[in-house]
Image (cartoon, rainbow, N blue to C red):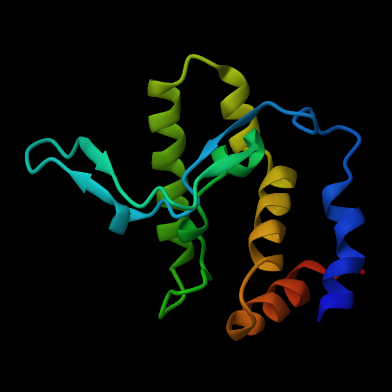
Length: 146
């Protein structure tokens, strides 16, 4: 499996049109999911984000792409997510970004399927070995045309 992932690196990571190749770099939580967010009972505002010990700086595309748990197959999920549900999460995410961000470049980055592919590859390639079947599934889904 590792040779297959290695062979995909160039085709996925190298992109001459990538405007985020050299930055900006931003602080990332690395375990950002609903379990690590405390919401207000009234209104649902975020009160606190927990579990910062794995935070680090990452390229912008790694942070502002859709969270992996939106996807239909996410490591750790016991079932496949319905494609309509995935799209609902993505649409809501974009609406909230449109309300909250002043930087239009963020909207461009998050909606770029090439950068989403790059992020997903980075997530899959760094999974622990007990999750190797996710790696194999991802390779199979993303090398059909090869």
